[in-house]
Amino acid sequence: MGVKTREEVLWLALMLRWENVGVPDGVSCTLDGEPAINSQIERMAYVLRKLGIGADVFRTLAVHTRRQDGRSYISKDSSWMKEPKDIGDGWFFEGCTSLRQKHDVLSALSKIGYSTPFVESCEEFVAGKSVRRFLPTEKEMERMLAEPEPAGMEPFEVPPELEQVLVSAFSGEKTNQK
Image (cartoon, rainbow, N blue to C red; front, side, top):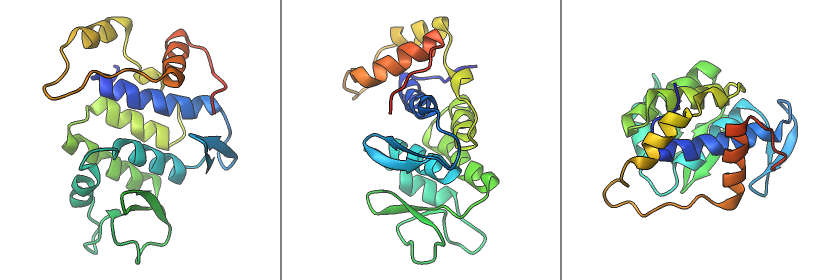
């Protein structure tokens, strides 16, 4: 089952772009002009940075990702963190977490309104698995495109570099985008 909204397709395309870079875990690469190491922590931070753009995502995640000691895995206070990862706007993610703990944080995305398939795609991405199976079918995509823009949303144009990722994803090709 594919992701449910046009916004989720966009985020999925960004994860596919990372996937298409094709470097093994632990290997350095460049993505969005920034150096990165393909690892669970980097993939987790990448998802959080993208989803946190222009939204109150981090505050909501902080509320829903409390640890037993009362601190949150997403926080503006990184002083206690062993591996703080900057995710933007003064927010940090505690990178020293198990895959299960990372998935627990990602499951809180449903509190923001993301669909179950999208949350699962994020979990698969962070685990280093392919997210290609979450692409909507042609019929699902036609339905999404036929729906009116949500109230208050500006029409969205896909940037050319992501358009290539989407085209190649739907055709099954791998790209060499970095």
